[in-house]
Image 1 (cartoon, rainbow, N blue to C red):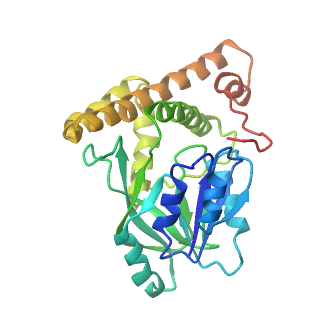
Image 2 (tube, rainbow, N blue to C red):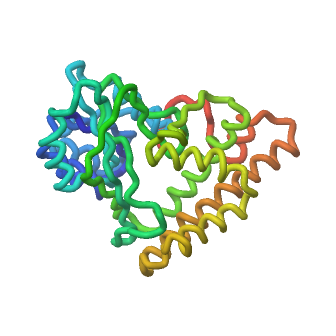
Amino acid sequence: MTVVILTKNEERHISRALGSVAQIADRCFVIDSLSSDKTVALAEAAGATVLQNPWINYATQFNWALGQLPSDTEWVLRLDADEFVTETLSEEIKEKLTTLPPMTKGVYVSRYMQFLGRRIMWGGLFPIRVLRLFSHGHGHCENRWMDEHIIVEGETAGFSGEIIDDNLNSLSWWTEKHNSYASREVVDILNQQYKFLPHESVAKLRGGQQAGIKRWIKENVYARLPGGLRAFAYFLYRYVLRLGFLDGKEGTAFHVLQGFWYRYLVDIKLHEVREYLKNNSSDVETAIKDVLGIDLRPRAESE
């Protein structure tokens, strides 16, 4: 099995991520987008192969990485630098991966998140089932600017073990990152309407997996609700109806910031771009560049 991790200044996390797969990975590839810290040195010290490639977006970078893997690569595990594989999942991969039927090309696992050191258990979010393990040549990252999932050609199976998302950076870093995420999500929302870029989606209601059902609801129900109001309604759903308040002080911070502030920020940025389009003789790609600072057809550049 080959592990692929994308990095940019991940010296806090990379050793932990690589250490968590040390017993199950035949090879680890770290695709670095011009880090200025110790990420590359730490990855190489842990035995990973490091390739440098300037950043455009996650999907572009990950799919580029798949094209760099050796021809004898059989299975690929997608792991973010701030994630780690639990011992339970590690053992499950060792015991079950080689016994899967030949038609199985992807494996779903459970993913949890820790925020400010606390695992988020309420709010209807976690565990989320994500496809992270797939047969090389039968899967790729969907072409999106935000919230990318792996699309697999073939049947899938499920393991019960977990991947834990536990970012150790400061809250200031988190909010800055999610400000960038909000802009990227606006690109995907506008693309649904204007179709200026190829659009892929795992959205599937009937017979879909958890991520596909959530994406379908997001694109076909949530997207039709009034901007701003839907962010508040979503927060109430998570925090009150799905008992998010039981996650304690750290959980309250997470549900307010990720479930309301972030979603409201997306709506206001979307409103800002639409107002720009209304008041200027501009195409949507130019509006996105002028308002959000995102060049949709750039030469690859650092993240």
